[in-house]
Image (cartoon, rainbow, N blue to C red; front, top):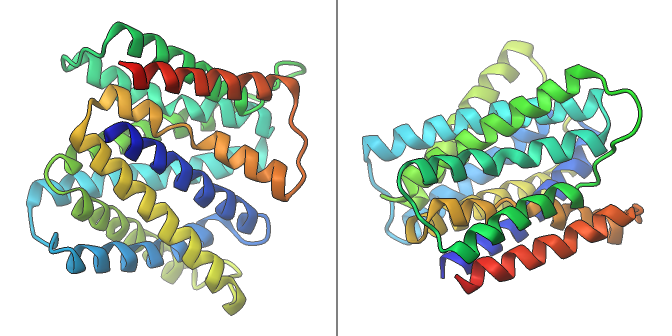
Length: 275
């Protein structure tokens, strides 16, 4: 079950990132993040109330708040890196975020089966290759640094999300979304700007917020049922979904190394599932 939930979270996360990336081409990234997270907060809060998960637990709210803050920093760093650097360099570096929770899980004593360890390594290589790394030409250090920053903060976000999810997955996401919404709302008030958002943007903002929150909830439940070192990798495969959607809908061309990455990723998933 944790394997299925983690894979589903990657699928839904990939859709959310595709929608977010599409809208961010027309609107400011921070505005898209804030607008979508308001819908994510409403969705996760409604779900918690409807399913009877609503509760106050200081540990859950603390972990959720840290995850929310780190996730927001990661998104800002990631979008800024994309704005100043090449997608083929930024995306593979930021996809290394899974290394953080995997390392923490192993340090804390998690011991996946040998075949799962091989699968983890193969899947991580696969998701990097599937992001389409550009290895030629001069590289600007600023977007590389920002992408590394995004990978680190995303990884910390995943760890605290999983930690809170051990107690109450749904409320952990409510806390995450509340933190992100409050921070972005304060920034919007200070700047007296909605970042160019208009009424026709509401449906896609709602779709982004609901799918992103849904993916977070799926991952938090997966982390509560399985090894963090395993589910963190399976939950980090979303770039492949985003790449495939961009290929299908926006007709973006895939390079040979991306096809190889997709094969590696699915092979890694198969090995992890066999463990």
